[in-house]
Every structure is written in structure tokens, then in C-alpha cells.
Image 1 (tube, rainbow, N blue to C red):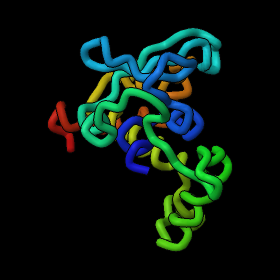
Image 2 (image 1 turned 120 degrees about the vertical axis):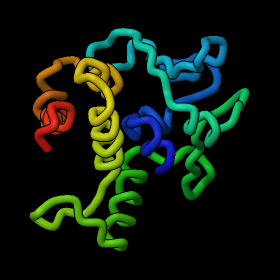
Image 3 (image 1 turned 135 degrees about the vertical axis):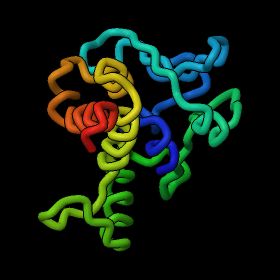
Length: 158
């Protein structure tokens, strides 16, 4: 869960992230290290994503295997669906309510919180890049309020 919180990655991306070159891997040769997606994004293009230093402190510097190994019952990498259910169960048991309808926290809420934090201190274009939204309207639809609040603070209207 900390990996999701610190990167804003989708669960299937984080669980498939490896130290060796693959469709989703860590490039330690670049400075800063980059998370590389080879044709695995929704638009089937290659992309590079920086991650904050806190993430690199969390995962260290592995040389092989999964960056965030989440073993299932037989020791193999847990499925995306199973991870989603486990996180949803934690949110429900902890009664972490995320909206007025009483919905409890899920894995996607960790991604949403990450992007919300980014949107509060970055431009909308930067937030779009880090969220890896192909359409800027997607980012604006969900995070534009934070930019408006920031503008109000800068103008001294808060």
C-alpha cells in the first residue's frame, strides 16, 4: 500500500514492476531512477515516470525480481484482483470513509490521494503527466478545484 501511496501507480503496474528490463521496470541507469513502461500504457506508447525519493527509500535497490513482491498463498505474486480485495477489506474494517455516500477506501483511493497531493503543488500539466492521463480533461475534471484553491490563496482571497 505504501508503494501505491508514494507513486500513484495502478495496482497492476506496481505488482508487475521489476528490476529487470520488461514491459514495466525500473531504470536505475537514469538519474533520477525512472519507472519505464514499454508499450504497456492505455495508449500503447512507451513512457517514463519519475518516482519520489521516498519510494526509492522504501524499495531499496534490488537487482532482480519484482520491486514490490506481494506473495499469495503459494508464494507466487498475488493477482491484481486479490490485492484490490485485500485493500478494500482493510478500508472497510478500518472504516475509512471516502465520500458522503459512505463508500470505504479502495486501492484507487490511494492513487487519487497521490494525484490530489501532486495537483495541489504542481501545474495541471504536471499532474496530468504524473497521473498518466492521456486527456488533460480527465485530470482537470477531478483535480481542477485544487488549482482554483491555490489561485485564491495566491490572490489573497482565502
